[in-house]
Image 1 (cartoon, rainbow, N blue to C red):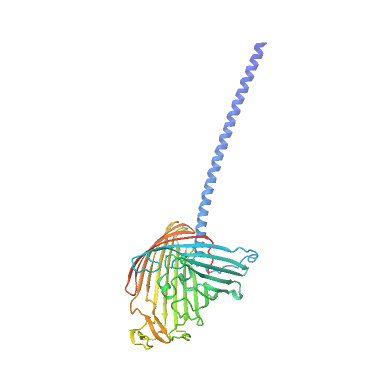
Image 2: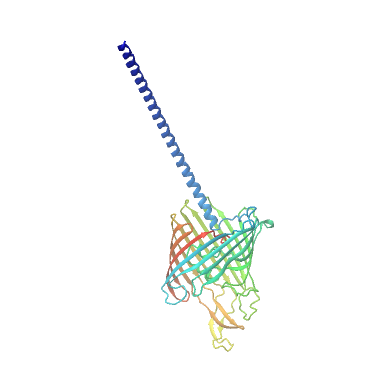
Amino acid sequence: MFKFFSSVFIFTLLSFSATEAEASEAYLQSIQQQITNLQKTISGLQETIQNQSQLIDAQGAKITILETKIEKGVSMVSPPPAPKGLGLVNWNPEIGVIGDVVTHLTESTEDEDGNDSLVVRELELAFGQYIDPHSRFDAAITLNDALEDQNVEIEQAYLTRYDLPLGFKFQLGKIRPKIGKANLLDRHALENVTEPLVISNFFAEEGWKASGVRIQNFIPNPWDIPLELTGEVLNNRGAASFSGIRRRPVFNAHLKSFFELSDTKDFELGATTLLGTDNLSGGARGNDQYNVKIYGFDATYTHHLDGIRKLKLQSELYFQDRDFRNPVSLDTNGDGIEDEFIGSIENHPWGFYALADFKFSPRLSTGVRLDYIKPLGFVDLSDGVRIDASRFGTDYSWEVSPYLTFHQREFCLFRLQYSHTENAQGISDDAIYLQARFQIGVDRHGLQ
């Protein structure tokens, strides 16, 4: 009996072991199948992620192109009005702080401000906020340490009113007149460390800023081409080409058109006409006649090779029609009689610049700017008698400025620039500039 039960027990045990082995093998096969299916799923997800990454890169490239266009002001669409509810409900304005530090090394031996120095050329405080759904106020205050005495300036401060009848936009306050491209940009926003010679000589060293009013709109046309027309009445101060007498305002008209040649190429054209006075008659009243006319043309071509590389070609040309009384003699001994003949003052000064800028990596860009100008002459009068004058005969000034820019981040860059200058006085100069620009917050006021 014992042997019988032992045999049954052993048989049962062996059967159970076989069954357990079969179950374990089936379980292992199931696990292997799950692992295989999981590997296939992971492979599919990796392919999906790769496709999505390529799609994101492509969309990112398009977004970068559009952001760059908007940043540089080539978009022909007016800024939209504020969303309803903005304005007085929100008491905290948009704030930005921009620092511009420049080191200037020159071979000039003259002890002039800015030569062989490191200065905070500009510290800009920018503020902006929508007042209501149809109005916005922007302002910028600049401080600098470039002179012996630090100074503070109202860079810009203006109100913008949208949604006027017939689609007009209106601005009132201190603005950068709509003259070409370079004058609209703050110094820290330029591709170069310095302004083009034609801008600094005809208008102002840091670009012309003036109080005034501006109105602009798009002109309907049968070709469906975006044509933006701007009209301005400006305070007659701060521009070298005009008299500076407040009661004689400067009138400016600017026409801009934009052509999108393809998804990656665009071309912008602009034309400017300025009308003002010069104090050629002497005395406090100045000249009643508008005898200074300035005509300007600008062109900008931009090619986005991809989401990173970008080529920009830009040029501006200005021509003046003035009314100096020629020939010029000066009162050199102070007796009220002009006794020294110095020749004729140029009534048609002109100049241009050409810029090529190429961004070839996310961090690096390079370029060169060429300037050529027939400088602006002037006559200094006292009670109608000419006591001083500058004239350059047939001489011209020219400058070439190659540069290299390192973009540490979107809001921080470092730039190295070399400039060789031959001016109309026959003086040659070589200079090196090192620039550091950094920003926190927003900088909206430059988008006019």
